[in-house]
Amino acid sequence: MFYSIASKLGIIKVREGTAIIKATL
Image (cartoon, rainbow, N blue to C red; front, side, top):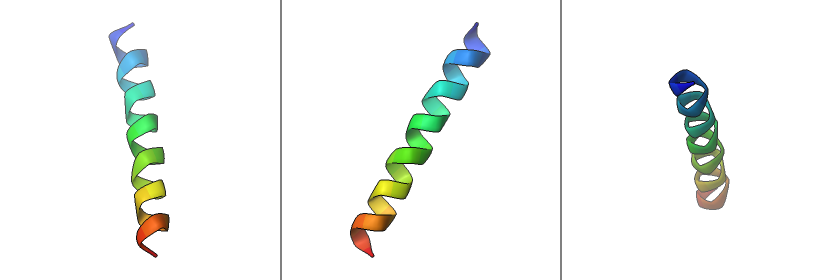
């Protein structure tokens, strides 16, 4: 259960990171 939550948070962080990179570019 903890792993699934961590993976979801990781995916969210990755999406936020890509959005920030696109914004800077």
